[in-house]
Image (cartoon, rainbow, N blue to C red; front, side):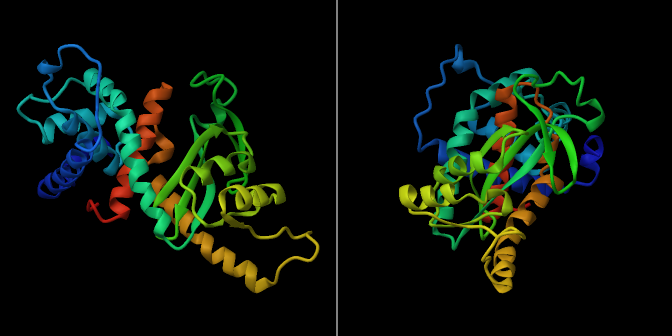
Length: 292
């Protein structure tokens, strides 16, 4: 699909999206002091703003292959040969990873003014289940975990994400697939604290709820288990379920449109830059700063 993407893309819309991202990135980079220690900086073919804008545009359009995306860029956006070669472009993206992370974090702070936040986890498989026992990708870092919604085992990571009621991604952390949701919950919800939070049954923990309230003044509600004594009313359970629907929608968008589960990076730095780029591109669309 990505090889023939240019046949179905409106060039005018593509240029409009690129211009919007470029203007936003340029304004944000002017607010931070960037000291990139690299030699021959005066000889760069493209500025940092261009590299970041191209990277975010690729994530916005759902490209998971850097090779296919670079081929698309050189054939549609920079047809005069002025763009970087693929290996140098990838190195520049990794070097700008801290700037991408900083910009995304600043955008995520806007979610503190939204009504409430929801936390949940999303599996990030790194291979087909049939290859779990012999895969070498991220061996020693990733591991095998169980996805309860799909009722299957997978090898990879787990994304723990906090989302506001308006769909804006806030705090997140990536762990091994076997990590329990409760262990990562505090880290996720305290990066950008929100006073009102919801979770599913995987986050049921009296100690976690008390710690969030006492140390961070954050209320945290979860549905009750079926065998729990003195459980809340059915109306309360349905109310929480309605509040949690937003994060299911966000996960569906990230998987189907941004292909967050298809990241092909083979290094931690590359994986992190790709993930931050996807979340930043999604945040720009959610806040209405870029049209998808």
